[in-house]
Length: 257
Image (tube, rainbow, N blue to C red; front, top):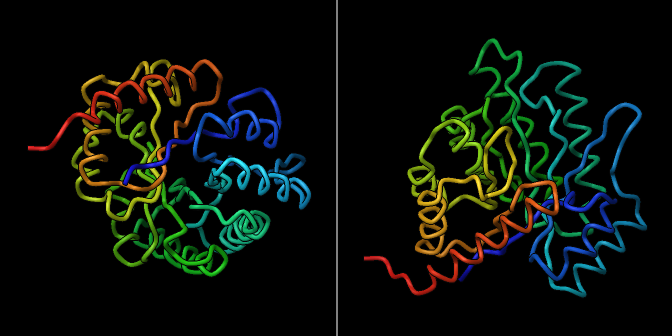
């Protein structure tokens, strides 16, 4: 078993459907990065969803859906309710695509009581699991401001999956191997990207030995989920894809001790 290599839906300066059509021969999964803010939304209409489904069937690709990043699922009151409803709206819109995972951020901004924040997050995930087709379809992502240790209490109380963002671990100066060894079994998606002047840059900036070790560990464990090159330009995508493919060619001949 081998993982499926994917990209975001914002590689080319064009809309979702154009990106997916151009990427279909290059990747095995596309992460649909969706947003919905006041006055602007890229949530696809029913016709676009149908066309996305047709492209997927024709080319044998899958989708992951990145829920809006401004959700406040650990908040109280109206902020919590409106965030849950926004997430439900995105899930309902994209459910005909049968996404491999819905990636979700648990933003901790303004959370004075971490235990309360974790409980509200758990409650939100329980609600959203019904919409997503099961808790395993929800993949909670570790962030620069929301590290794995803050998520573990939520994961221990909810059967959701994990989106392990290796780039965010590198950004924090953390070796990703212990996280992979501890959590890859419940990880549905892995995000790879380099860090230089900013986050989400080409894997050309990733630590060479660490990237090789990350790919080797996924192969060793037989990881069969999605690995998303979470970058947002043609140049960063092309160089990242080439680097991963080159390392995989080397590692195909590698065997664990």
